[in-house]
Amino acid sequence: MESVYARIEQEVAARADRLWDVSLALHREPETAYEEHRASALLAGELEREGFRVERGVAGLPTAFTARTGSTARTGCAARTGNGVGPGQVPSVALLLEYDALPQLGHACGHNLIAAAGLGAALAARAALGEIAGSLLAVGTPAEESGGGKVAEVAAGLFDGVDAALMFHPGVHDWTWAPLTASAQVRVGFHGRAAHPTGNPTEGIDALGALIQLFNTLGVLDRRLPSGSHIQGIVTEGGRATNIVPDYAEGLFGLRGKTTSALAELVDELRSCAQGVALATGTRVDVTDVGGRYEHFRANDVLSGLFARHLQAAGITLTEPEPGIYLGSSDIGNVSTRLPAIHPFLAIMGPDGSDHTPEFARAAAGPRGRQVMSAAARALACTAADVLLRPDVPTRAWAAFREKAAAGL
Image 1 (cartoon, rainbow, N blue to C red):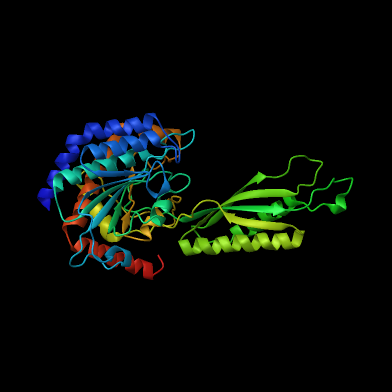
Image 2 (spheres, rainbow, N blue to C red; image 1 turned 180 degrees about the horizontal axis):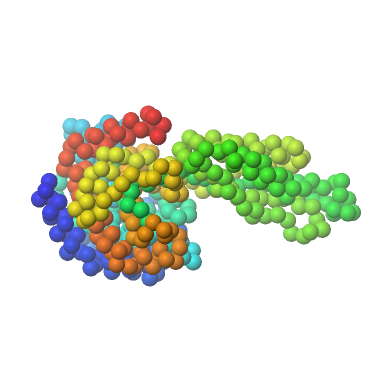
């Protein structure tokens, strides 16, 4: 494998300037969720020019794409059942490219670097490995920040038959995996009856009062939630005039749970609280999910360990995340609970910084960002090569996956 790793390093180095140009192009023209038309076209075009078979608009998402090379046929369904790659089957690996930006803040999460590194890894792996008995897939995954492109792609079966999903994320820590919680957006709407507060006050049923009571109830609930779980809400509709009792009031709530099952329990608690408030206030309540839920991230120690060792060659040492710290949620969780996946964090600024800030956006176009992008591209490509060329790797990765799934992690 050492000669393979050396060829990959050469291929990444040969493309370093072009990859950085792509990263800066995305950074200069940020596009938000589901609007990443230029980014998707740029990345898909780069892959197509180097021989990938590109399909655009996959999973019903205009800005999503897949790019494939190598063997595509599989016998059996090893990855879907978690049995590893057996006789007569070929391994398959997916490199994930994110490229949506944040409103007003641009690439303050560094998705331009994720896209460029994934692109570089795919191109370098294809060039270095040549024709192999395996499938290399690059997946364009829009709307990570809002909406969840990967949620739709998982549902559409894009990852069926894939043995490993690989990506990295820029951050302020060098961590082997991402402590990402499950999350959901839930809309709660109370229906009451309008009335004039002085003309016919006894006929009114105050929907806004019910919503306020729900906030008070959730404040009590929130104090007893375990680490990794919380509820945060805003009022999105509270009436139109102060001299009319509101007949409708609505809140939008963001919920997080340490695990996907913990999130489901928390959503059930929110629903119970809302129904209890409705009963107490004489209102009627609707509780509905907004968009798809993000599942928690299930780290795969086998693949994460390989990536960390490859990254060490670039002088970047990864450590385990600090206990008790959670870094939000991502739709990579929905991928990781279905197949082995990695999502390491690589620092592009110091630990006193934070993503989703103007400073982080500037770092995503700075020299450290470029260094991290190139190092990640090489480590991702080498890890992909491990999956494709070493039969023990997907087998061990799936065994680790099954072990954590059985433990509910």
